[in-house]
Image (cartoon, rainbow, N blue to C red):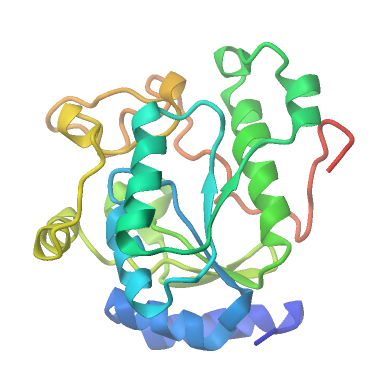
Length: 245
């Protein structure tokens, strides 16, 4: 089902009112029912990703799953993505990579992360995702309020950048995620056991100390807390670094 962009804010508000206290599976079922083929799930295949991926595998295993392969992910993440997708029977996992021309112009030596992490994230995450999401009216994220920062007031359904975003796990705490993983015997990301409760690219992700926030190891020592894919931008805006989409 397709909705005009002008309809999406009211649709998001209505769905959030209906689903703000709903179980994540109910939120996912509503998302699939409302948007059908115009819906995608965006997953990092990170520390907590198995929960949402397992839920969607039971509802619609052929739902497009968009995975941002930045070229700087841990090898363990790439292996986990492959193995978990196969285990869950997900049949449409799409690897999104930065455009060749963008890398050639914006980060030819793969060292941009050393001087400008925002620009690096924009080139390797924001642009590839923006281009992929052009084909969809709505998408699903794995964000939760207990991660803190800007996520503390996260709604279950929101409108952003002309699209509807579903955050089915917004209300869940770590204990609920752990219980679900255990109940369904889901494999953990191998880096979790090494002290990584949140996992991104290897240059900008560190283990956290006991008692620190879940995302304390992401861009440690910087004010940065988000990669940029959840920062509001003008609808349909795509900054073309390399001149060739």
